[in-house]
Length: 252
Length: 256
Image 1 (cartoon, one colour):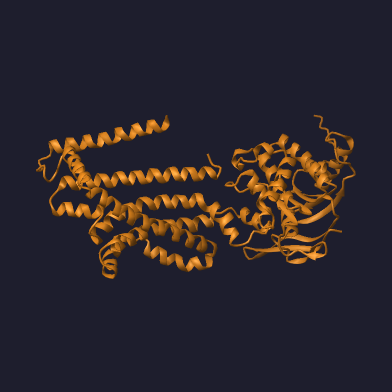
Image 2: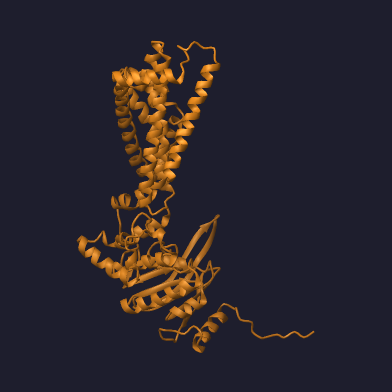
């Protein structure tokens, strides 16, 4: 019931958005080629679906996103767990992280394209960078916040590494790590588009550039909507996975 | 003697000043004894417990268990904490099995042992529950079962019932006495509750703060199954009250 209700809310909310768009379309003086109506964008969407370009580009983008995001999350968690346990090392790593973190991943783009050329890799690297720091820092923080009683209990029962890491530290830190993973998902999805706009000849980001070059604002807006929709779906999916896992932690 | 403590002292440096948490404690504890360390906060009772359990060693003197100097915690002596220390992502059953996982046992053997102790603490119906679904008293029972599965010689209990309501606490006190008799464990129990100490202990180690030291050791000449309202019980309690200067010496009547 609650789920149904929230689904209803989503529909109404998106309805309002499209309504606003329609009103803007009616009152604005722009040529409809440059500022298309929702219906024109919808037709462009149907056209892209029919000729297969949309599905193709979604596939390409999702592949890059999957590779970049998953590898980034895994590496960041492993590094974070280790660094979280050795603060004496992390105190030398941390300034480095704080220096690199505020740099927008897109700033690396020209450099990455120079090194690897145009294709999958620049987009993957951008997503990797975008997801890496939030997950790394939340993992290190999570390990630091573990209740010392867990270590006492482990010591008492003779639980040593690597079991200590796997049986105690990782699960104890997990709820806070999950926060970082969730945060990183949104950021990474945002930078996927940026990455593909500069460093690729395919994918949803490239489709936007391509639409601009062909002066197809309807295709452009349709693509933007698709990007938003996929972002929303990914977020919902991760939220429900997170909820399932946290249930195992005995919360709720 | 199972535990021999000789001139055990513990000092910290705090804000550049030396602070004595524990001052020359001497104590001998026999196997199977129920010892309560009793005193107000800051008297070093938890410090002493942590030192015997091997978590935080003393820096002068010596503490020996079965003639071996204590240097680190082992699963021959398990500690039970006030806030239980259960792993919230594990079920009751998995929590109880924690200490068995580093031993070479088959899954069935582990289950058999954990079942036995979960039944002993009366939680058979909650085997698959997670700690957060249980009340505080039940969580502490899980911790007790988890401690018992590794068959320790000594149980250290650091204000284990401090976070529980009075009625649950009394129930658990009875349970721990029961378990103590059935399993014949040595128990060292930290508390600041005088009645609790009188109810449970064979001997009460009365400690005072600044610096933390043993003021006296009171033998409780009562049998198990104590009556909290009997004359003998009150007499022992009185004696402890005196030691803490909690009894007014003379009764003064004011007439105006």
